[in-house]
Length: 149
Image (cartoon, rainbow, N blue to C red; front, side, top):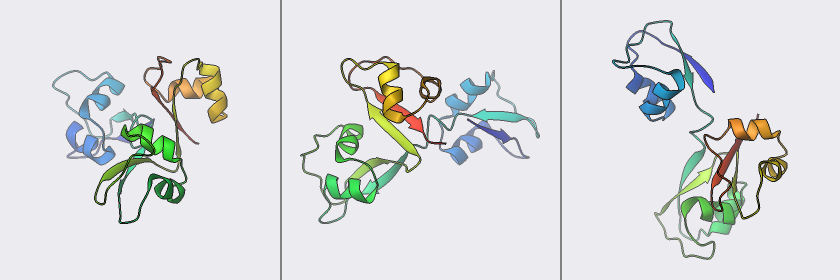
């Protein structure tokens, strides 16, 4: 979470654009009520741990999931999982893929996962993993986020 101090001319929408966040997330994080009027100097909690976790990568000629993963310091399986494709699936020039940012670790849950096993995967306290995610259902295929400090 970040804290933003409202400046002259700020609106919920302009702050949302600045942080690339849906307005509803700022409203929920701050328990704001309509008409959502802001005052200069007001502190707002910005839930950055939930957003801004991906870069967009445009596939170039000769790219494979494996070469992209190597360039981006991640795995082909993770890029495939995040983008809903098979790791052996053909990718094409001009295609846009989501790739985790460098300070973000992601995990896609499997059968039998627990908060403890996921926390061990990240080498992080379970409280930090829980804090970094709105809801953890432990169902196979859920994307779990952990932002490195």
